[in-house]
Image 1 (tube, rainbow, N blue to C red):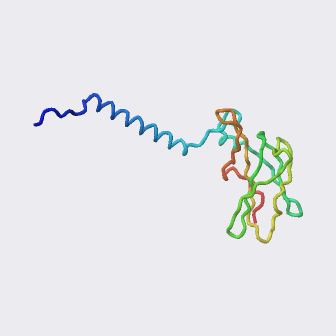
Image 2: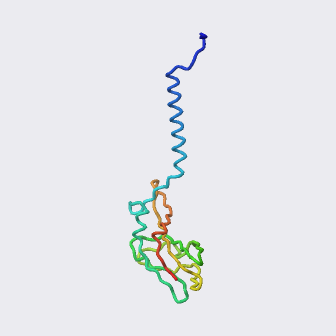
Image 3: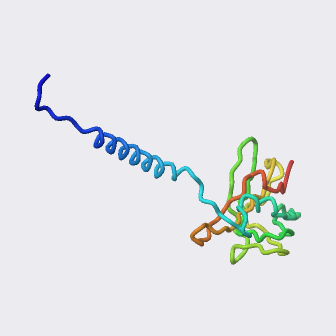
Length: 154
């Protein structure tokens, strides 16, 4: 054995290992935050739960224009309209009111293309609500398609 060579003391080696583990944990935590959805609240509940409380009554006019009446207790900020035609579907944002919201008890005619009864197989209305994040900011939340209302079905 050669004398005079010095190694890292066990205390310093342990401290270095603990620091490396902490740095790796912080990196993983910061990286994973991009995958976690921000929680939005409406009426002090998670906004996902409020989607089931939305209630609308849909209507189709004789000229195949359409709209809905908000008969529930949740104001609807906007709606997406899912139009299915011949195996294809597309989602269109509907402009319904001047201020962009359909309050409780109000009706609106949606300014989206009229239904073509020869090609359209289904039209669904998907509500969009406003919720608050933990900082107090207001953000849109599109309800899942399971909460959509069928307007037209061929």
